[in-house]
Length: 82
Length: 288
Image (cartoon, rainbow over all chains, first blue to last red; front, side, top):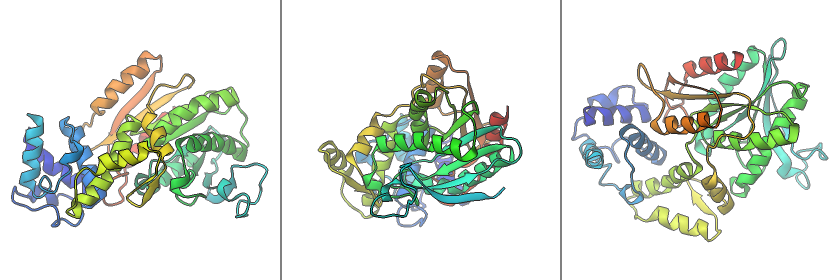
């Protein structure tokens, strides 16, 4: 499994981006840059990542640094999986 | 057959649900879909929690119409404090909603003019599935007839559902560049019996407690159980947590018809989306 692809697929599904997320790179900024990412979308994204990767996100990890970019989000998920 | 939107009173003594002085909190918004042709069964929709309900409106309407066309009388209704029903969200407790669900089952049967022998399906979506499973025993006890369950992407537990709801506040704070520890302080307020405000919804402490305690346990009395989930991909599978839950239901003796169909998580996607495969599979299951 390629975690970046899986994270992007989750982003695309949750935010109804119609495939746009699949062109994102590690450097693509998320928070403040993707207008679809409102509070409900953030929560849905967290839940979907938890379900897809079998991880548990702690309350304190709902943090701006985690959701800053595709790269930071992928690193967070990979660290959680290991 | 057209759907009939109307208000109904949970208090049978009050025929005027618009009388703000007396019957105001008893008024529930309902949409009744009459069965086309001979009546095959009754279906009561139990909607999801907070914003998920709004996002699911379209799919609930599509499914209701499809069922009505196939001979089922369907009732959609808004729980106390939700949608167009009376009351504020913050007034409602879990027990109110359980009572609402039981009331609506009786109201649907009356409205459809159906004898007690007509099969009743409780069609619960997400947190609505928890509510339906809990209300099933109450309805069986009150009527002597066990309802069947159609569960759409049931919330695994009320505890998880509550956690996800409280996270909305943490996510909003994060988007504002705000502080941590938001969820901990919300939980502290609730445990002190005080309401909290999350994403524009005031949450009663008793609602939080009731939801948190709700589990998707197999009811003592039920006829048939259909458990459907949607997921993207060619051959989607049930969620791992659902597979574990289903084992418990099967051990308890229920032959659960469980399946995952391809489709988006329309109750939470940013845009309003359709999952036609879910409508089709639900119809198939109920008509079987």
